[in-house]
Length: 317
Ligand SMILES: NC(=O)c1ccc[n+]([C@@H]2O[C@H](COP(=O)([O-])OP(=O)(O)OC[C@H]3O[C@@H](n4cnc5c(N)ncnc54)[C@H](O)[C@@H]3O)[C@@H](O)[C@H]2O)c1
Image 1 (cartoon, rainbow, N blue to C red):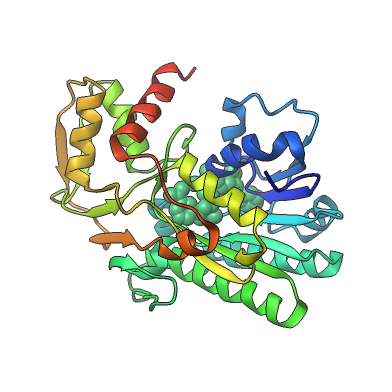
Image 2: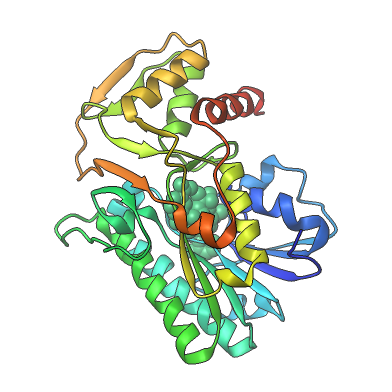
């Protein structure tokens, strides 16, 4: 399957999602990982010594090192970002710099080096605190400045418009991916399922925010990776924005915690904690556009995904 014989430069390439994408494409392509190694999911793979992989330790705020690393790549996949609500709230300035100015730096490097194709990573947070069957042409919603959680969504939405502007004015074809709660092996940076599994395997309490009635659609990593391969292979993805998520794996946080406890045969109980920042109450995507344009659809059900993820954490060294 395409892509084949391409030079692919991946910022945030040591991260969770990137590590799975690289496993899929590395045998047929040359991949340069560009990452400041804040996180390193690659350390849990056999990829590090692969002949087609080069790892460059660098920061998306360092223009020169991006330009040096990006070389004459055919495709850029831009995933480097500050993620995780608590970090975003604690460090809004760093978040905006890395996510927005970092995206600007990567797009500028593409322009200067004549690179014609970029995949950028946005977020489902751009749909705001309540969204059912979000569709890409519907409205986005940004919360108020007084609630710093929304710094992340703001940085990502502005980055989408920035990528669009580089296509319009400089001809760099972009695709923006909006992931909806992706989980699975190697999600070492956090996330509800990561946190629940870690505690369930130690028989420690699972911390559930508020009453646990928040609703999320959970996308297993292999479904996300399928979608990314199709985006990379299909010219029809150029200039488009895609929701990638699994509306058929929709649960409350309470159900998520219960499922993890049951499938882990854990003795953990739940502990309820009031959340200090605004919550997203419901977030469910429509993925009709990805089905129509890419021929993609999610395949991994919620329980199957949790079982696979649990297995990885059980065997993790
Ligand atoms: N996992 C999800 O559910 C989800 C949801 C919405 C959006 N996203 C987006 O998808 C992308 C990948 O997410 P992920 O879950 O793999 O996250 P991740 O944290 O595992 O990966 C991000 C990578 O970026 C690197 N990085 C951070 N700051 C950097 C900097 N200044 N310079 C260079 N590298 C830097 C980190 O070291 C890490 O390896 C991100 O852009 C994220 O915003 C993910």
